[in-house]
Image 1 (cartoon, one colour):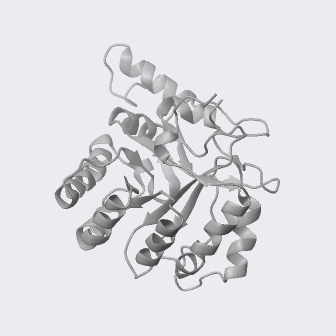
Image 2: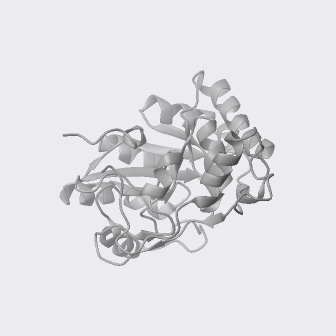
Amino acid sequence: MFYCMKKQTTHRVLTGIMALILASAVGGMALGTDPQVAEVQSHAWGLSFQQENQPPSAELTSDELAPYDAYYCGQQGTKRLYITFDAGYENGNTAPILDALKKHNAQAAFFVVGTYIEENPELVKRMVDEGHLVGNHTWHHPDLSQTDRATFEKELLDVEEIFGQVTGQEMPKFYRPPEGKFSDENLVWAKEMGYKTILWSLAYVDWNTEDQPTRDKAFSKLLPRTHDGAIVLLHSTSATNAQILDELLSKWEEMGYTFGSLTELGAPAQQ
């Protein structure tokens, strides 16, 4: 199987989503309008690391997420990492991050908000030119778990539009929920828009620009949590990440890892 499995007892199956889909299919009802439909659940993505260099436990399993083209981890048993960055704004750290990725011939995915593309077109074009995926992190970075479908779609479509204007290309269909907050309906809507929803299985507290971790602190958090198939979440605003990325990529390579593309997620396992 391609996806990470939780080692502890799995949490509830996404019964709310299944009920929503059934309600939509039977009688043409709009999602969430039938009082008999199970209550739509909201989620705030979090992880619990139980064992060193093993996948974390998460609220939803890969098997529960997979029918909706949603992923937080890749294939177990292969030394593959998927590096992603969230980019809400630019503060000078993205260029050295791109330099380090280029040095190691490592592809990454940058999940950007609409204003990032608007304000940093040359950096976005560089990401594309150097083979990185530029994913959709919505225009305003809102909590979409409490919103309606029209608002959800507009947040993604507006980013697609500015990306096309800047690059002349269609935006890759990869979406990351802001702050990791999403509802069952969001998963359905994203899939119906052609998107894969990308969560993560490896992260650390790197987002606070006023309290950046030291090099040693970063390595003490990241390296023991590294595991096969990890989708790594980093922030491109982190000065620490910009400083350590070259060394971090080298350490991962020494651990036997190679760097993959999110396009691999959901593909049949290689024989």
